[in-house]
Image (cartoon, rainbow, N blue to C red; front, side, top):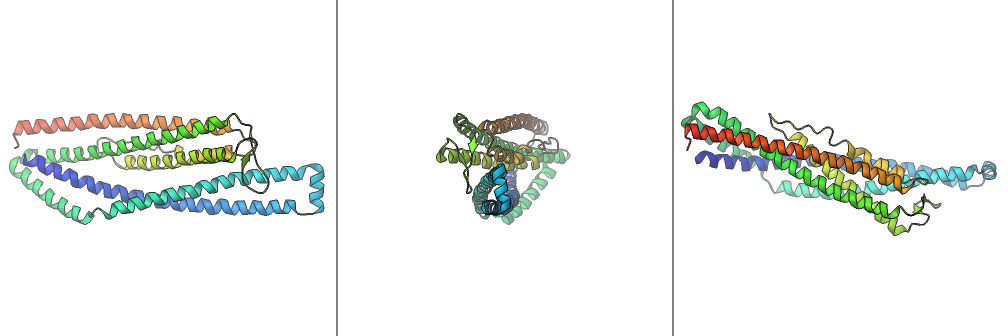
Length: 321
């Protein structure tokens, strides 16, 4: 059937144009996220340098420092400063890793964009729309408008389903990374509370450096997975049909607060169990988000079947061939 062929060609072109639009939107979003990571690095580095200066002053000789030493105040001040420095160190390291990962994502997006000729696609779409319009006016002018509406809704719904699937996959990947982070923290939970050594940096009293680094890396992998999930959810939010709106405002709230809380839990006197609780909470948020996506996916599938059924009834009644 000529109409079906025209429709398939239009869907293919629209899918490619949607890809261009989505990649362009993600490019802008990731560029902003990279800029934010760079700002975080600068902000935390500045704060860390200020703490180092204060620690140097605490170590310098003065009558006030002598008095503080006698009363124990100097040790308390030193511990407080080192505690803050340890948290800032972790935040700086994490922001640097995020910047690297997002920069790699940006390179991939730019590569994909260069492989698609948007101008050529727009010309082909205009020519195709003209053919469809002429065909409908000749074959069945009374049903032409409704068929065009159905075709447009079908196209958007299929694209929406694709976006939801991609978001679901990103969510499952985030859950996997969160699970690994939780397991790493669980393994470390048998050790004593965390401690620091003077001069900057973070160690645990009875926890080896490699175990600490492993947990930190797992947490980073979870964060970048959450960031990518967040970006996919924004695509779902932007992609909706006139009759099937997708509300995602509540989907993306967890991504921003998660790691600030985690880093606060890694302070001198905090226990690993606190960090585990934070990971567990975010796991619940991701689970709930995926469940809501699946619900929208099912509704989109049902809506698509309704569109296809109505279109088939029109074909049957008017014998468009």
